[in-house]
Each structure stands twice: as C-alpha cells, then as structure tokens.
Amino acid sequence: MPSRLAPPCSRPGCDQSKPCPVHGRDTRRRGGASQRGYGKRHEDRFRRGVLDAQPVCVLCRRAPATEADHWPKSRQQLEAEGLDADDPQYGRGLCKPCHSRETARHQPGGWAAEQRR
Image (cartoon, rainbow, N blue to C red):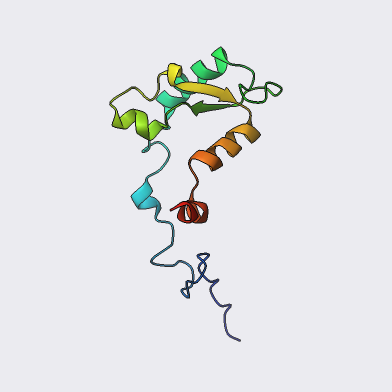
C-alpha cells in the first residue's frame, strides 16, 4: 500500500508539497526566541517591569494584563535605533486577546504579511 502524499504548500498558487523550499519556514534563519532577544533578561526586566506598572490591559481596561507589548515601537525598531529594548518604558501591558489583535494588525506574519505587500 502506498504511503500518504505530502500536504501541499499553504501558499495559494504554489504547486510544491510541504516542506516547500520556497515558502517553507526556516527557523535557522529566524532564530529561536532567546536568539531574538526574548530570553531570561527580557523576562526578568521588561515583562515583569511592564506588568508591575500596568496590571490592567491598557486597551480594553477590563482584563488583567498578561502580555508585555513593545509600544510604540517594536523590539526590532528599538534595537535598530540603538535603544534598550528590555527597558520597561518602551512597553505596555495587554491582555492576551488585545495583544493578539494588535500584533496581527501591526506585525502580520506568513500569508497575511504577503497580502500587505
């Protein structure tokens, strides 16, 4: 009996199968979370500092803040400007739904990022 076929690439119009050499994710290029700056220092300094200062979501003002969001500039923008991206002054406390919505709006990934271009 033949083995199951590989699923197709998730990119519309691509006829390759997963893992697609053109559109597949390559975590080696992206790096892990700690390689991108979200390690122990980030946890101890940025996240804790933001959530201690803003225990309630600054957007909906109803739910407890559980996510520390870089604001008004992203972590990448802060680092590009030579600023300390782990300084709590560059963050705001958000609840999970608000953080997901804001990230999707301002930093879409995958297929949504391709559509914005």
